[in-house]
Image 1 (spheres, rainbow, N blue to C red):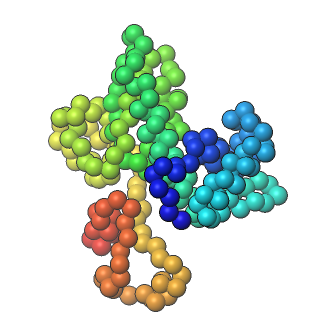
Image 2: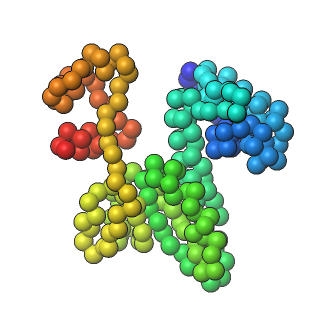
Length: 208
């Protein structure tokens, strides 16, 4: 379903969705946001009606995200990360150390943001300014102190520490996977290749 830019969902609807996705429960989401269970349920119903699809499966133990819900939660997590780091970022308490950290959206939303509060709430009065972007920024030219990026860590003048390994693999619908079958990876080039930002992941996979 397509919507014009003047029909954006209210922020409270996305906050309700994010809280329910993180807690796996409308009741827990309501407690987190200081709302009623019914208010959360109505916001989710509004979201599903707006999208024209289900984002949660209801069960006896709570709710679980559908495949579409998982994709939406990844994007909303990235969006909330951007909002968080760009609000009040210019006003710093006296004596606060400011560290500029660059990170790709997927790592920011799924790994870094849940740890931000612990990093900032410490006796050193550390303030982290987070830049979320897929591009390979010039760290020196843009004044970036720390960066989380994909690669082998060979950046002149910088010390690199491996955080984790990235595993890349292609996915397809069951019908298309059956049509492709097994064999030389080059056979995939006969089909349209879809990527989330650029084709670098495909190039890395074919080169492996």
